[in-house]
Image 1 (cartoon, rainbow, N blue to C red):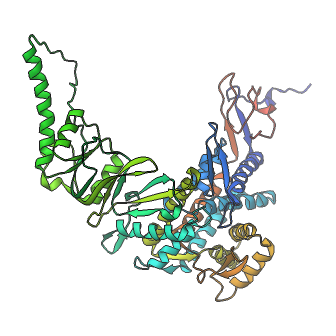
Image 2: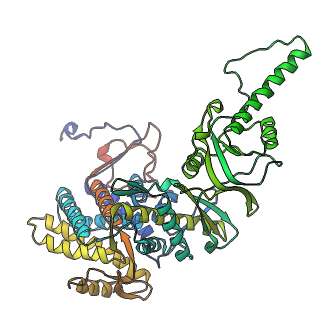
Image 3: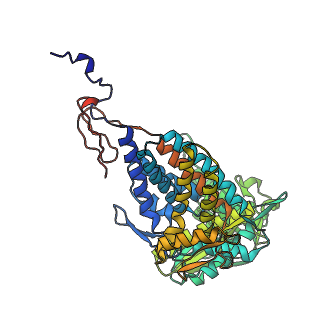
Amino acid sequence: MVEQSSQRPVIFLTEGSKRTRGKDAQSINIMIAKAVADAVKTTLGPKGMDKMIVDELGDVTISNDGATILSEMDIDHPIGKMMVEVAKTQDDEVGDGTTTAVVIAGGLLENAEKMLNDGIHPSVIIKGYRMASKKAQEIVSSIADPVSFDQTDVLKQIAKTSMTGKSAEAEEELSDLVVEAVKQVSEVNGKDMTVDKDMIKIEKKEGASLSKSSLIKGIVIDKEIVHSRMPKKVTNAKIALVDSAMEIKETETDAEISISDPNQLQAFLDKEEGMLKDMVSAIKNAGANVVFCQKGIDDLAQHFLSKDGIVAVRRVKQSDMEKLAKATGARVITRLKDISKEDIGFAGNVYEKKISGDAMVFVEDCKNPKSVTLLLRGGSEHVIDEAERALNDALGTVTAAIRDKKIVAGGGSSEMEMAIQLKNYAGTIGGREQLAIEAFAETLEVIPRALAETAGMDPIDTIVELRAKHKTKEGKYIGVDVYAAKLGDMKKLRVIEPLSIKTQALISGSEVATMILRIDDIVAGGGKGKGAGMGGMPPGGMGGMGGMGGGMDMD
């Protein structure tokens, strides 16, 4: 009888834990990443399809934006969440190219799986991918063209390219507004121009077409004037910004006041009234005729303000207070006692206006405002939400173009140029890394392939023809013209994007792919008597690692 004790499996995980190792772990991770990439691949390009996501409360999101789709989807598996992070990083950094980054990551892992099955070690693939990513960034930088802050037409085309396919039908008008807004808030910083995107406020209101959207050279506050007797319009407005409450403060500790006769009570009330009067007098003496307060305004203070003809708006968001300060030149005051004429800002007009039944306060005609508002109109909630996402993308790409001072052609032309040059580079590299670099080049061709598919073109014929065009000297701008369903010169068609969209997608996509490839062991913890909650794994004990199957259930 053979002694079994030396072969007994060692149990070191809690009951309910699940563990998957080696090729099984890698294949599961790659499968999840590919599924996430496939979920957004069809949204690529102007002819890309939209996705409808319905959450558990029944709220509906209809979008073409990769980052929005992935963030709204209820993805539970950790590898899926890593893919969502890729889109989020891309969105935060440059505002567009989220689908491209995710599709590149999925394509790299799909090609890596083929190499793993051929016996190539993950470390070799990772090294090759890193070399390819670095070289691809050099290639795309070398084919980029310069752009300057003064090239308004080019910046408008960048905005338009970003918005195409995102249900923003009024692309021409909106791209004009985007560039005008970015130029307004931009500031000179030495030799460079800096743009703070946060200083461009997007205010949404339904009830009109997208073409009725407008740029307000000032700030729109989604609040109403607090008192009915206050003026509804003020010209040559002198604006005070107060971030403390215009109310009588309660004591921080419990206090008790003993009053023995009615005169003492009246004196107490008179004192409170006097304090509120002093607050209003401080604002009036500083020369202000409009006050925006971040906190509450007492009813009695409202009465005194209205008697002095001062317009007041209360409970303004902190972010709006910062934007008002940038737009009007006012300083935000914490202590009303300290307010002076130097703290007062200016606006040509401050008025209340009803839009779609809601009263809003407009602060307009400011002197060179460094904060503006894009008032976005739309026929329905879903239309206006998608238009807002398109605007955010356009603002990000125009800002990135100004920052990078470099642009590249879109329509898959840059990806194809990188793929062609990477294949040439792979030939100069010895060893198995050459296969990984070639796989990276093949992955980049997924972008023009997907664009061809969404345009109803034959993807294989398109890729073959594109390769042939890009091997000529004048071929670097040739990409997929999805509107004409044929190849075209993207520079002449004015399909252009900032360089950082491509470089960031390469960095994010390759880094997450290499990170996932490094994982060869998945341990999903679960307490005693509890199931592990990863990837839909069933609850229950294992009895030991030796008795564990090689697979993992997935949702």
